[in-house]
Amino acid sequence: MMKCLQAETGAGIVFFPDGEICVENVKEFSEKVLLEAGNSSSVTIDLHDVRFIDSAGVGAILSLMRNFEERGARFFVRRLNPLLKISLANFLKIECGF
Image (tube, rainbow, N blue to C red; front, side, top):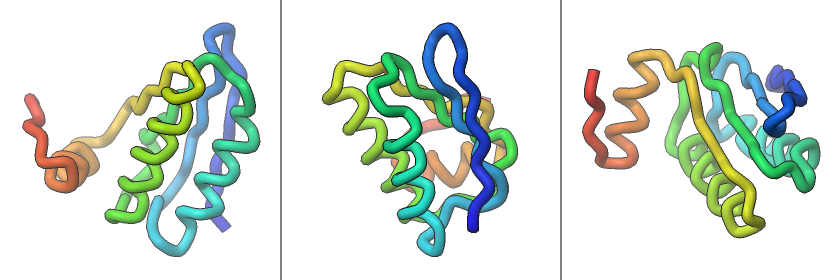
């Protein structure tokens, strides 16, 4: 089971997953975010404590982003460690400026 804390802020809800977001736990992670965020106007995924993310994890984050944006909510991903930035850049074929 994946540990994923959450906190309500004045601007919405923030999720703090810990460890890995991978094929083994991606369904649990996505369901938790969708259920707990409900109709929040702003959803943030804080990846500070995520040490690894695979293609299933990246796909889940992109799917969550689309889902919340279709509802009119703002969606953010923040505090990626440098290795995670490189992994995401490789998956998404984007350039990381650091």
